[in-house]
Image (cartoon, rainbow, N blue to C red; front, side):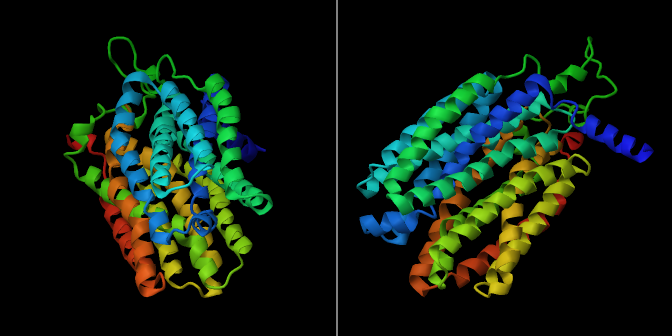
Length: 421
């Protein structure tokens, strides 16, 4: 009984801030993150779209480049706006842009239209993404922050799983055009009202509640406020910033490369399309579990250890990838890839806060997201170009593995930079 009481006390302590208004805000952030799941549909729908419109894989994958350029270049702006004006307006506007983009994708006729609308979707995803909701959730929750972020970030996986399943089902009955139409209507009819009702910035970020009158910090003040937070320009002059930037570049290079080509790779090797969709959805569903699990774990271990663990698993998944299409390694790859890529969303805001403090987390995260400009734009096109040239993905997969191992090793050297300022 004593052990049960102790466990219950630890759970209550870990979730003490997840109640009342904060709980509703966390729910609203989760719903906004569902918008990120819309992007997961574009890869699995590639065969239907290019089959009807007569494009090559490289032409279709090329749309990712301008999309990610927009997402990357606007990330620092989003971070700056979040710090100065809060998250609510950005989240609501982004949902509207997402809805319009998918409603117009349903009427797609030419390649230039695809590129423009995918850029709009990239802008929406930036506004709904980790920077905006990560800062907002962190302002509301101190105790159990890793768990709170894990819950919030499951939204992208829940959205991805549901949207891929929905799009696949609608496409089997009608066409991909009706699938995109339903997705656009869902954003404006479901996501927007929920976000409008729940998302608010706190009157005073919970981190600052431990600051006593006169500037003395209360004894329970968290570690990230024991030293002043660093601004974006200050963070850029540190070793940890550039290690995090490199690891984020390698992540997007690998993650989006596989996201775009996994279903195509599996069907190229003789797998039924429906079965390939099933493996893809399973990887997304595993992310729901991994974000909560690693978020809770990150509340119990140093944040630098949490990010190192995640990238070690990411590197392992890419090694499994090089062993495919041997079916022995398919499930190990799906599990490791689904767990590690999703959990990265949780550990990154935590490691940024660990290294630089909370006050400018969104600003610093926005600057780091410039790594998306190179990694995210080149990964899918790199894999597509090698496939078109060699007829397979072997060289692309080996490159992914080497880069992920290097990133995992580099993360062993991150540190709290505020104490060294």
